Image (cartoon, rainbow over all chains, first blue to last red; front, side, top):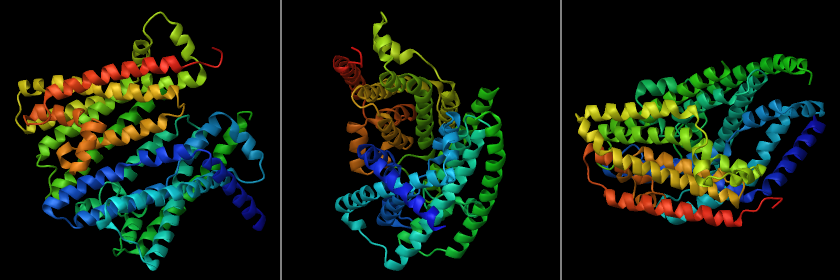
Length: 262
Length: 240
């Protein structure tokens, strides 16, 4: 176990070094995910006139939290995996003495570390521009948010990795991911806090894994009450399901992959 | 067969996106807020135009203009430059992609639906045609200029991501944003002229005048042309 852990840490360090080479790109990438700030403007103005559950400052904080969460839980493993399968690079990776999944995970984590300073910078700039919204989550909230974020990232990664296995059969596995992503976009609380949803929609959404990927951690960060037990329970159920799906697809897919002469 | 399935998936994805966007829009109105004083039906027209613009982007702009980046990276731009027709023209109209067709269709349907709810006549829709065409020209120019930048920076697709994020902002009428945002969307990245101005013309609202839009489109056309020329002066491939 210890040995595998060391391998993994080395991989994370290597991909962090790799990502640091592309700083400018990282900045652009962060900027390109400005959607939360656009929505923030909309909701702040709308709630200014009519009042809402949160009010302008509340919405500002909520969408800043959404931005941070989105940045910290970004996953793109399906695109990497698909390319590796189509170009046959996976064959070489299978020869390495470590499951290829670890390599993808390491590259995500390394990139995350490289991204972090920019996130702090964006938040600082935001508070300078809009000091009224300044707040810091307390240590207890920060700890809970961290746990929720780790779980959210793990679940996102697992779900996408399971879908990535479809690449063994089709060249456009990411079409599934696109479809899934839209549900994520609209049900996760990315577009608006879930308490603004009509009750029926919200009750359905709470059974899907999506609200716990954005809405729950965002609520924790802005210091609102959340049902953590329920959140982790739903995530665990979906996580288990996707884990078995992934193992199953991986095994049958791999057999098919090697059968093609690679 | 493979492609037919993909097309179906793309159509479903677009439809899902549309339903989700309309749902997002309804959240404002269901919670007793409005978007810069625009009514629900009027906001729907804006949304429809935004979906149409997105379809236009993925049908006409992304497959052509997006390919400039690839030409530069692989060095095939040389062959294109050798062709005896205008390069900008050739690069702009070479390919079509069918993936955007569902969005084009949905966009038109949504605009018509919103217009019917407002009881608009055919002549009202006709008023929107010229602003819409201007909007398309503006969108094309922005895309082309961004892609021209790939002559200097090969990895420009991050920039197009940024652009896409901002175009998403065009899904809502510009007056719904705070003042600072409105300035950016009008003068820095003219999102307003893509959706809000044509929508305002259709539903009969006041907004930036058509002359402003026309001027902007003209300036952008000249600018993108000049920028392309400049880029070509700097372009030299590995062997030339």
